[in-house]
Length: 363
Ligand SMILES: O=C(O)CCC(=O)C(=O)O
Ligand SMILES: [Fe+2]
Image 1 (cartoon, rainbow, N blue to C red):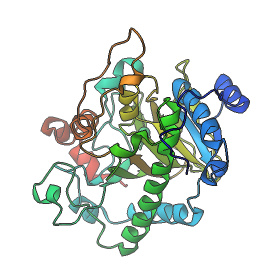
Image 2: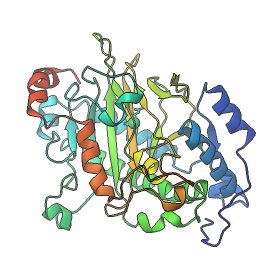
Image 3: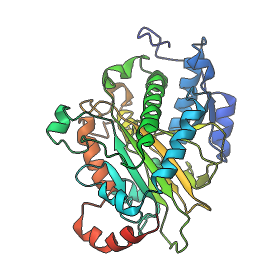
């Protein structure tokens, strides 16, 4: 992997014609081939960096192929996720999220209601229909953050009756983390930084795995979604494609692009961490999941920096005459309020209204 800090930071390579055409059309996500880069081919890093820069400044979403994650690992993660939601509700509710956002989230038990991006998108007013089971980076019982009961840094809750689940998903997140680390030089170069710029921020990176189940809901109401419009909080998100439609991405002209399936591809998108670091140069694109025509599953990997990494704008990303649009703060101090802005299950008034439906629902 070429990560030399001495590499020139003022790349003259321009975005490829295919990427430009795809962004101009906005009918499908641009598809980037990672093969040459992962094989260390000369020039591959600079070309990808130019393509990613162009995409991130416009659409903020793309697909990657030849990414090196074995399809068997992805298939198994989907298979186990399907089984996860077949577990009886009684057992799932024993593992419900609470103080830590680590565990089961019943359907209609919350609503992704992001005040931060509300003005940019249609306001959602109804409870999201998806169910999810969420995991943070695995920690041991003697981890100082576990011992100190640091919020969202507790022990993951694993389904007791599905022992193969942990094994499969551990292998999956390990592979995803390795791939995400390999993508960092591309983002650094895309921002005109030395290729190794992000290394010091990702020594023990955090991640968040969201295993999701979107059931086809019969009584869908106006303003209701399987997953309401939101932008991710991540540095970047990796999402294996599923043939079942539902994901829609907001285009620069504020239309919803329906993502079509590319076999074996992973979707990559920017979240708010990279949006902050780049002082808004790289957009954290709103997206949503609409009611699917059949059962739909997601195994979503959100990649974050170290808890203590500064997620304020990088000085060289603040253009001449511009101001920093975000404050300097640690990733952790960004993350906790980000989740509280999105999830409202700790709000007793909100839960009073949704509890009966959430508990009796079929998911
Ligand atoms: O399931 C999907 O296709 C998208 C999921 C998503 O946007 C998320 O989990 O943040
Ligand atoms: Fe998302």
